[in-house]
Image (cartoon, rainbow, N blue to C red):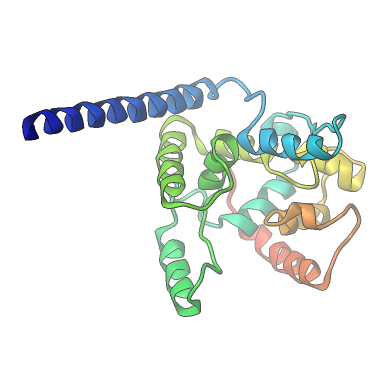
Length: 232
């Protein structure tokens, strides 16, 4: 009886392992495809349109792909300065920032600080849900490794800037530039770029043309850091 149970357990474990491997191979195949092709959508975009259409069946997302060369260097620098100052130096994970975030969260007794790099955020945006769990964080880490292994920094940043949420139903640099400022991604100036980078953590909280004392202060910090930000 014990032998039969053990065999059943090993069989079930094998099925789970094969399933997990298949999912990882599918993720990696997608990443390889995106070396030279643009994703049609992202996990975040799919979830957001579902939420919007629950209220308005005719709702649409604002999104337009633009190549890296047609995105303002000011915006690239602003995003790197705001989100991931070591973007050009790390291999997907900023271990020093992670260590500091863990210490801060332990002091507060709750999660009050994160340390996600641009690569980690891209992994989450493209593939995963917004739920917080150790399983999701583990999958995020695996996909981050895939992105860093298969793509160069320029491509990672290009994808990130095209699929980041920057307003209610607004995704990517081009749609955000037109929505907030009536210009193109290429035409974003320093202050406009700093504003978009400042609202990245909570983009749906700020309506078009709306700012706060916090955002103004955040913009000043980003503008001060932009000259030193390294971009591919």
